[in-house]
Structures are given as C-alpha cells and as structure tokens.
Amino acid sequence: MTKFESSIKLLAYPQEAVYEKLSDLNNLEKIKDRLPEDKIKQLSFTSDTLTVEVPPVGPITLQIVEKEPCKCIKFGTTTSPLPFNLWIQLLPVTETECKMKLTIGIEINPFMKAMVQKPLQEGVEKMADMLAMIQY
Image (cartoon, rainbow, N blue to C red; front, side, top):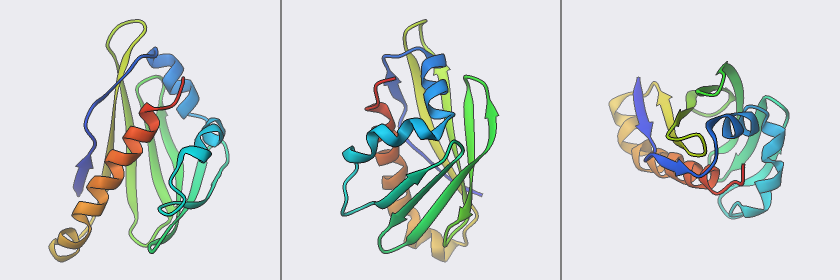
C-alpha cells in the first residue's frame, strides 16, 4: 500500500472538539462555500458519508468505517475510480490545542503511482489545509 501524508497541522482547539465535529460529517456543511468550485462540485454529506464530484476524476464517496474516539477517524471509498482509505489522526498538544495529520492509503502499481502521486499529495495537503481552517 502506498501512503500519502499531509503535513502536520496545529489547531488552536481541543482534541475532543475537533473529533466531535469531524466524526459527524453533517458538521462540514458549513464549509461548503469555502471550497473552490472549479476543483470540487456537488459536495454532499450524511452523518457518515461525504460525496464530491472532482473534475475530471468523477464522483468520489467516502464513508466512515472506523472511529477511535478523539484520536482517529478512518474512511473508505464506496465510489471512486481508484479505491483508497483516508485517516484523520488527532493528537493533543495541550488542553486547548491539538495536531492533525491526514493520510491516504491506496493500492496502485508503479506505473499508476507515477501518474497519481503529485495530484494525491496535493489533494491530501489541500484537504488538511481546509480542515485546519474550520472553527471547531
């Protein structure tokens, strides 16, 4: 499995507050207007799924498959041209701050890796930046 990791983001919010907001995807509805419409279209949520249209890739649906309270939220794809997993990891720094890192794990052959490495790395970093901007 090939992994792509975001840089570590320092959030000025308690670990529990960040986890509570991210573990119910309906809470992300508030950030839809911040996303670039030329990159992401038709974003929709349920409490445990997120569906987005990413030109030219097509629709991608992520579903929460595992939660480790206050530490980790794991997602798997239910719709995607290339199936992958996504982890959001949270670690406390102080009582009022935490660190966040996103990891994408994907099974790809070396030829495909050369084609998708840069877009996936940029995508996981942009996703981490977007999640770091949320007021928890």
